Image 1 (cartoon, rainbow, N blue to C red):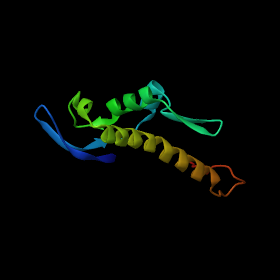
Image 2: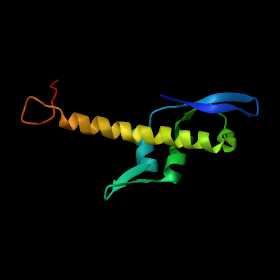
Image 3: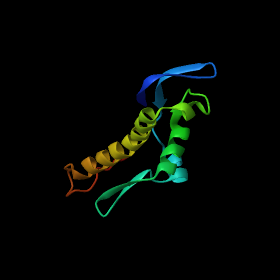
Image 4: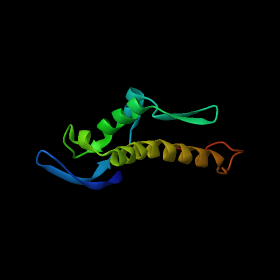
Length: 112
């Protein structure tokens, strides 16, 4: 779960909010939406359409259309939150790959 504090309080219908909550993406989300960011020749490329598709999927407890009135600073904070999911997962993956294991770098296995 990721919480994004907003720069001000917004009202959408009967809903009032000053922060947004996002669940973490799952495999099904990734398979259906794809990459939100990637590195190409050392340059980070973002895919805004994918980022906002993730926002729509991952946003919790906010009515449809409520984000349309976000100020630019808050819209950028929302984009950053989605990008963070990917950068954090990538960092965990690389950290796990760089850690020592007991059998010549092979990942640990479990037995039933």
